[in-house]
Image (cartoon, rainbow, N blue to C red; front, side):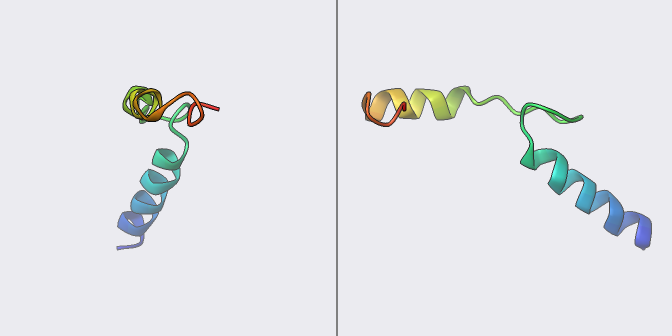
Amino acid sequence: MSVLIVLVIFIIIDLDRPRRGLIEVSQQSMLDLAASIGPEAAN
């Protein structure tokens, strides 16, 4: 049970850092959204 809890905490911390870690999440959708809202949102 403690291994499972540690694994879940590790995954949460890893997902919190999208550019580093074992799980890499693309930020392209967020960049597309900011571009569609307007140039003020991209800053």
